[in-house]
Amino acid sequence: MGGLPVNAKYVIHARVEIGGVVEKPDIIGAIFGQTEGLLGSDLDLRELQNSGRIGRIEVEVSRSGGRVKGVIRVPSNLDKVETALIAAALEMVDRVGPYPARLEVSKIEDVRVEKRKKIVERAKELLRKLEEEIPESRELTEEVLRSLRAAELTYYGPERLPAGPEVDASDVVIVVEGRADVINLLKHGYKNVVALEGATIPRSIVELAKRKTVILFVDGDRGGELIARNVLSAVDVDYVARAPPGREVEELTGKEIAKALKSKVPARDFKEILERERRAMREEVKPMERARVLALSVPSHIVEKAKELRGTLEAVLYDKEWKPLKQVAVRDLVNALSEGEATSYVIFDGVITQRMVDVAQSKGVKALIGARVGDVVRVPEDLIIATIEEL
Image (tube, rainbow, N blue to C red; front, side, top):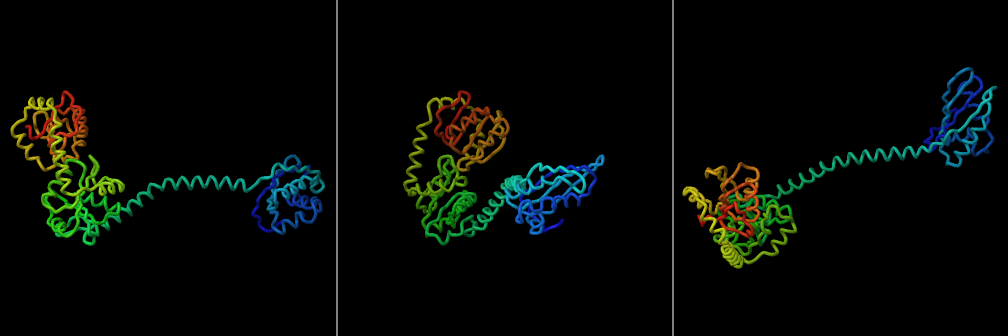
């Protein structure tokens, strides 16, 4: 028999065995006929099916030796108590047609449990896909940020210096070394920034300093110091800010940038600080180091080359025969030593630091010659350190 479609909450599963050959309609008819009136009119199977609270009864049969066995499924949209009553009523069927029958309910299936399992499995699958797509989302976010930064990056003056969009509008201008520094400051919201972009002081920067308050923001290394000296000698700078020791402006976080700018000092005071540091560094060169320098024999043409390096922030790597291997920027020297060919001697326009000494020693370098000696507390016996002036 038919009825309205049912979005079942439960399914009654039953087995039936009949002592003769019958058809499916015979079994269904027996169910309706023998349960009629058992549970009252509210739970009459025909009425429940007509109202859509009980679904279409499904029967599958198999015949063997003059007997019939079958499986019965009854979808139910009743509550669990009413469904259990219907299931119990089905077991009252004891005849189908003229033949004796035995009907037994094997289980009541909660369809919602199965649906919940499917929902959980599907949710897991969707979550895995979402997790796989997260890196792509991060890439998209970064791409948008890069686009915004690129859109904000402008060029100032006839020299087309990399700059932020508010250099002209702001009363205070931050002057940095290069394009990467400008981009990093733009990323953290500083739009009144302009780059020197080279060793030569641009005329636009000189003129800008006459009209605005200028903060020179340099790296916290030897290169930053040299740039500061160069700019201070030609530009009317009001304040100088430095990145933390050994750090570059282009790699600072927003918090580090804010702290460095807050710690800026007047240009006059900065010149005095540089002079004090210079005197202190001279005093730090130990007698042992100077004695070992005397044992280093440097060809005259190499000495001339070393003097030409002053102010360039460059480094030259030599083999054991004093043949040049490569010339790199000082900021790339550690990587060059770590990844390049076997180097015996290094001459560079920078500060000899403990880190540089340790890397040089680990790579078998015999001599490390820099612009000056920094805070070096230990020098290996097989490494000579010296300054260019001592050659």
